[in-house]
Image 1 (cartoon, one colour):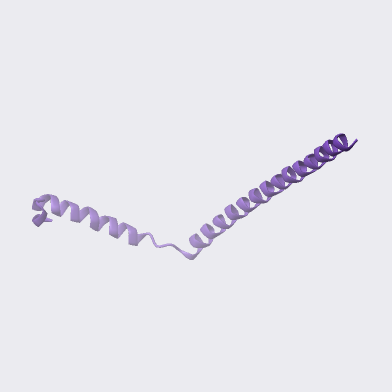
Image 2 (image 1 turned 135 degrees about the vertical axis):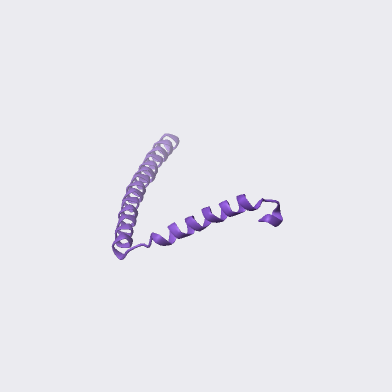
Length: 84
């Protein structure tokens, strides 16, 4: 770092901060129970999203079917007026 123009005092301070961050990171090892609880939380979130998607698909299907029925009724009416 001194080659980059940073004086020795600041370079040592940066080195200490980086060393403590790395040390802190390796002190926090994930246990099996922690990983299991995190996986369980993710699975429940995925389940909630799947439910939301399923509800949205049902609503879209209702709109498509309703629009198709309305279009069919309109077509029959227009055809009946045109022929009759």
